[in-house]
Length: 268
View 1 (cartoon, rainbow, N blue to C red):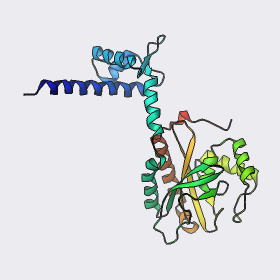
View 2: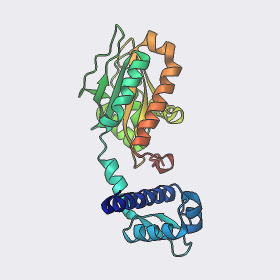
View 3: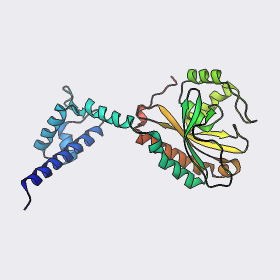
View 4: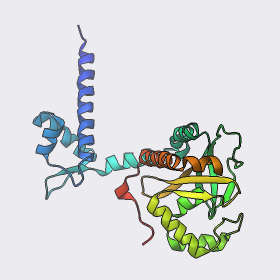
C-alpha cells in the first residue's frame, strides 16, 4: 500500500511537470498566447491550468498582458535562462563538435576567440594526417590572414575592423596574404554572405583553413571554429568540410542560446 508521503510526492511531481509544460508552451509562442490556446495546446484541465498559471505569474515566471489577455514569459524565467547561458563554458560546449570535425576530416580542428586585436586558440584537436598544423593552445595569430580571424571580424562593424587593422597592421606572410584594406573589406563581405571564411595559404604556404563564426545568446560573435590542413588534402574535400563546419557552428551557437532573430547587426 502506497504511503501518504509517496502520494504527496507524486502529486508534487505531477504539478511540477505540468508547470514546466506550461512554461515550455508559452515560451514557444512569440507575442504571447491566450488561456484557451494554452489549454488546448498542453492538454491540461482548464481549472488546473489556470491555477498553475496564477502561481507562475505570482512568482514572476510568466506575465499576463492586460490589454491582449495573453500570457508570455516573465522576467524571472529570462533571468534564469540568461544565468544558465552565462555559465556555459564555450570550450565545454564546442569540444565534442571539434572532435567530430577532426574525426570526419582527419585534419586538425580549432576553437579560437578574439582578444586585443588578435586571435587566440582556446582548444585544438589534432588530426591524424601525416602533416599537421603547428599552432599551439594559447598562441596568438593575426586576424587579417587567418580563417578564424576573418570569420569573427566579418561580424564586427567596419569602423572596428579598420581600427584593428590600423593598430595591428596587415603584415604580408605569403604571396596570398591580403594587405590592402579595401580588398579585405570585400573579403569580409563575402564571408558574411556565405557564412564561412578561408585562409588560402595566407599565413603559411601549403596550409589551408576553413572557418565559421559562433554566436551566443546576445546575438554577438564570441568565437570561431576551423578545420586546417595541407592544401592538397583539404581543398579536395572543401564542400563537405565547409558543410560540416557550418552545421557544427550552428549547433554550438544554438547551445549557447543563439537565435537568428536575436542577432545584432553591427554593420549599420
